[in-house]
Image (cartoon, rainbow, N blue to C red):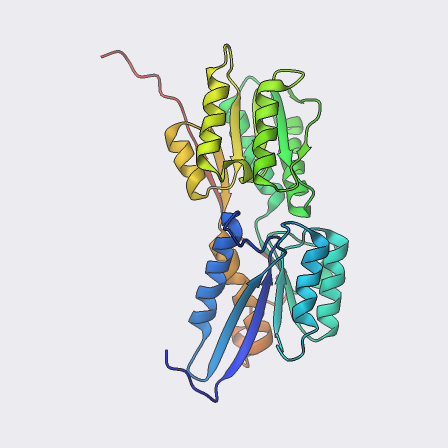
Length: 318
């Protein structure tokens, strides 16, 4: 597309929980891809839509996330029209949304929401309670006799919803008994290495046997080799039959499913979240076509869940 020097520009900023400098979290990398692709699609010769992705270098630090967001909100020279934020913490993110609204910037949340829905135009992302119930569905499918489970999670609002959905399904929608073990959930602070260590500890060093370990996001699996080594170690133990059901379906996780290093996955459409974040903000702040604006009464835009399960096959002898 040729550049018109008189073209107007609409700038939309996405603030994730992680700057993701080294692609440590595939989720935010794919959200960014969707954001950039939709901005390019919406751009014309006379009007350029710019998408900027940013976040805290110290991943999941709500204070640093607020500092990064304010860098854009308070910079009048940037003249941003839309702000999408994935809240790491409810109160601090709510303050950021309030400040952006007062500055005339349209706002949405993505991936994770705030309690006060009046602070944003819409939430874009997964129904995290439903994702938790999806994880429980696979747990019950893989272990129909019931048993014990452990959660590796964190304190972000969306992840707490996943914990809630998982527990509610296992405790109240199962015909068999489920027990959450002592020290569950463990808070990995959304650190990949710490999450892997916590999964290992539940599987090998728990005070009581753990039938299923459920990381509520894909962190422990993002280092494919380290995850496979850990699972091989667990499976080599005598009488070990611990199962692993994990949220997210990114490439290293799907590869682990194929190789038999995870039993089930429940994922979300991160690319679509990036697309919708830009699209909805652009429709609200930058279009003159009232018929093109998304349904004003709709404040939640969900994305589809993907469930993958590895079912062992008992083949007849040749």
